[in-house]
Image 1 (cartoon, rainbow, N blue to C red):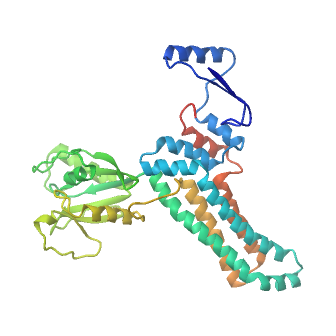
Image 2 (image 1 turned 135 degrees about the vertical axis):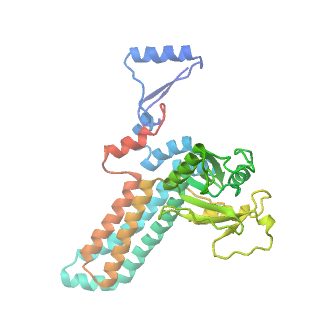
Image 3 (image 1 turned 180 degrees about the horizontal axis):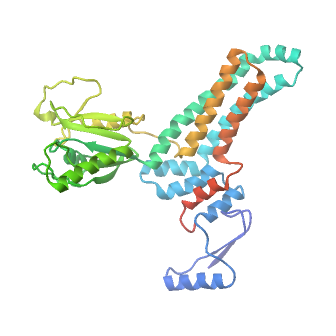
Length: 380
């Protein structure tokens, strides 16, 4: 069956012909081969979606969400990607741009008058200008907070579990995974290599890395190598769990920039033990006691709440654009309160709007578009 979609009522906005045939690979290859013989070519990764973007059928955030929809690792990420594809993120960005434009209109109106008239008009509208800019700051701040979480949801996070032998690292990993993914033994040094397991933690894809137990008296070459690998993976960790048994001290060398969470296991054997420092978490990996509190502490370390609901996924470039926009909006407020030249305020507002606009439809940069669409599979 052959179906024709005339422009602009097609996915790409161009004339499109779809061929629906039997799934036999021989038949498919024959049709593709015949099409290429008569002048067609194989599509590049993401080319259909790229054409839809260039023909203004969708904006860049919607194009990116197609790839995110395919690559979603959790149900929450899938729902958020679908929301972005439907235009929700674009709508929020555009509403925020409207707030910035409203402030720009007031400032530009003051600049249109002569110097003496400008001062008078500015004094009468200053309060309104401040209110407009503050609305923009509030809107961008809210979007930035959600985008940071959405970025983490899209990219996933890495949590490294570090501790001495037999403190229960593998038991904890099995408890979180709800299956036997790690070998548990009373013999020290059972875990020799890094064991990686990606779990859906309340909507966030989190890669937990179980490591070899760290001890000073290790002599076996394989165990020593496992300890070296355990320390080497810390550089790429978003969070390091410093795990030990209740009542034991464990202070391994960690990167100065690493986020750490101190976790004490086997609380079931010490029911009356009280925390000595704020932020300490106590669990029993064997019985499950305290696991919910531990998960909440992990979320808190990442700056998000448990059971998160994020309306959209986001990318680092979105977060970067929002951060720059917020910086310019905050700068314009500072200039305004300090009584500085309106030209400086107008320029800051212009920059704030520009960085917001770049999120949905960059004006230039073929390199950026090439990077975005290279992530797609053939046929999208």
